[in-house]
Image (cartoon, rainbow, N blue to C red; front, side):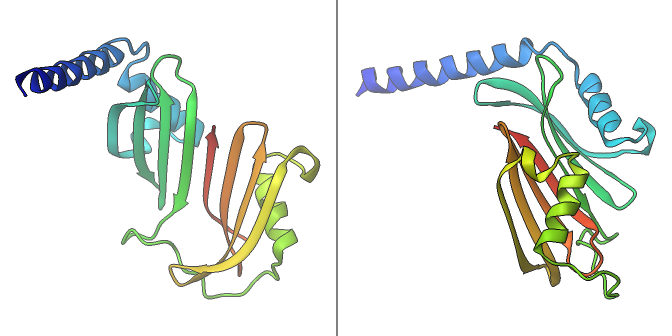
Length: 176
């Protein structure tokens, strides 16, 4: 029993050592990661209200998890701590109370094709450049939305588009 307990403690301590090593090996600072995220979002650092900035290890790769608010939008970034490359990001439209915006006016006739076109245009891609394109309509948080998903090479794109206005409520782009 003592050998088993010692072995478990040894393995756990190795995990702590390697995790600490990964943190110490980060080549970019937390401030640099924050600047990469806000520049990508197209805003100035002083406009961002940071709500989460922490370092983590994902699949053995050190990365920074950064979340911030600006102009009724929530931004969520994962940035590789070794090279500063954006691993994934997500933007979400928010109300002041933290819930997604609800639009009551009907200004645009939407269908699956129009929703897919909006998402592809935002991603600067065409139908011919993507695979596994899926689009369906659903109710989410009381809002009628189109969910659009597609792949370009090893990158997955997901969008939520307001079915009444055509506004992109949320998008998530993640390299796999």
